[in-house]
Length: 169
Length: 413
Image (cartoon, rainbow over all chains, first blue to last red; front, side, top):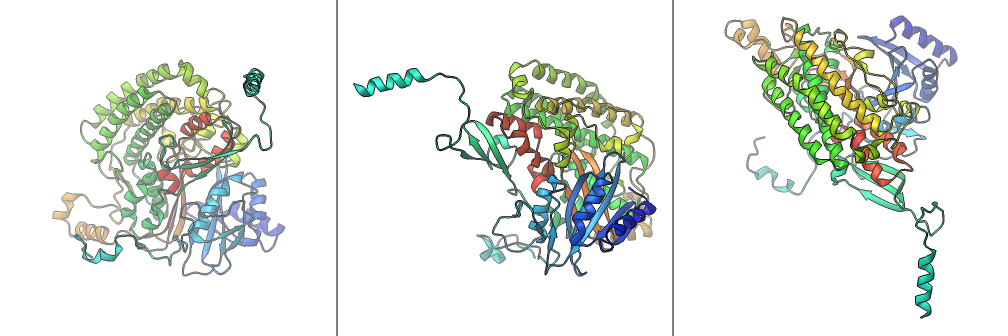
């Protein structure tokens, strides 16, 4: 991990290139994170890739309900030479959940981006195959959002569930 | 009459040499659906293969058939109750799943894991790695037609599962790792049984190599088949034995040691060209290295507590409940509500049997995680299947899929 100073230096460098790109930084428990405007995320990732973070270790979505903008897309970048990690976070709202794809930089982002779309409804513009990956294609809603209810969906035996033997709730 | 002579003429014109693949309506592409219920897909993986004759021109993996929403379920459980749920993701690497989740939670809590617990974790992680590789070797060889390997590998796997049962009570999904340490110290007799296994295992691995590496059929199915170079693998985010087979010695146990891995002396096997044979050889060599690590961890097992003495996180010992009011309160709080984790985010990567297994946990200050995400290596590595098999025979697709070692429970979560 870059230390807190290293993170600030990186953020300054990115701000010098584009004043609107970096919105903030967090350094918590040894994890360095850059908050980035969603429109400039590819630009920032390209710069970081040039600085040695050549591997996208993980890409995942987070729902920050009830904070706004609600949805977050996190890129965990890895520098295999320096054994260094940095996270990039871009927040989008549920009204306009669009973010440019990172598949041009990291072809391995294809499946993870589809998963984030599937679970959170974030649309990655320019993705070669923006479909659901884990849920059925006709599934309504985005199940990992915090306001998506947990519990069952109706199946064949739901109608007499209340009378079923062993129903304790 | 004329028809018959025509036939004879056509028959004579057949040369039996391989024809170059052409284009147009005489060379139609065939779309073949493989799976989801097919023994060679190692789970419920569906593959849409586009074939030209017997050659795979393109392949699309379709996943999601065993998606059970474990990440969503974990959000509704307190941290210590989420451990058994996340263990069920990659069902051959349950200790690794628990380790990644506990590691992320410990990072957020700032809890120190005692050295004895770290060593016990290493012992079980490496036993789990051997177990996972044995299942891979057994089922992989089964796909190549070597059924005897399956019995031999599962015999050794059984010994490991017995060891798991001894230390935790369960053979699979053991819930042995806790936040702050491990559930219990190893019982009497465990060390002796483990030592016996460690003495046996390298000889067994030699036998596997004798059976497979001098077998003409296995060699022809693996040697030079479906190689993929290091740069492509890196751009696809592939890690673990697949990346090491192409010559890149990236292993988180060495690169960024966690849980005292830096205390042990072991090597990282690497391949050269990254074909199926290298993938097989790298995993096979890892069996020996894991045995070495376990032996060192068992011999150097430090004395001390097996779980953190922090009563806010770990349950007090049973005998304290009868004498200490404080312990009773802690016990009650932990069992009913669980512990609260200060708000923050953590990503904890470890080296699983298939590559980088990273757990992302977001805490919002309550006793339940606000987000749990597992970066499962199988999910990412599956993307490398298409570039590997394009332009190769469909029979090699089966061999390559076996050497890729995808676990559908981890892919679909």
